[in-house]
Amino acid sequence: MNCSFQASLWKHPGPGGWHFVTLPKPLSNRIRDQHGPDEAGWGRLKAVARIGRTEWDTSIWYDASRGEYLLPIKASVRKSEKLAIEDRITVDLSFPSADWRAGMAHLFAFDG
Image (cartoon, rainbow, N blue to C red; front, top):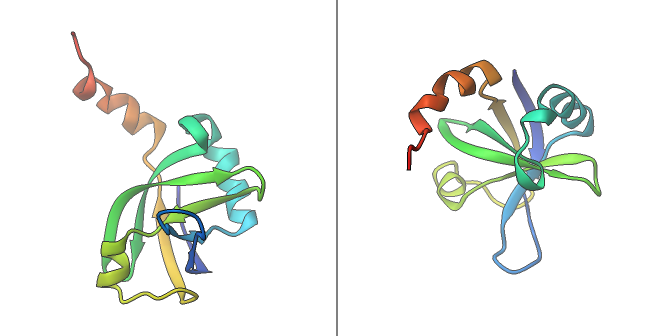
């Protein structure tokens, strides 16, 4: 699944000052319908994000109280793309398929 959306950058008021964009609710619902079983702890779902010319491996996090996913925007991305709080940005997201993950599992196996 590949998708694009626009959202405003915001900063969490708590410790650490994480920066996020919130995925639109209809898109969040579609992602959850298709990829919900692939979520790890705390509603985390691996993704590849692109803003401008910057692409990185990341995860989106499901915020159950809002019913929407949050995408953290790390400092290096904000710096390279010259992003500021409340900037409206376009984000492209893709998700590794379950078939791809299953095919790669042998690379991460540990025989102990």
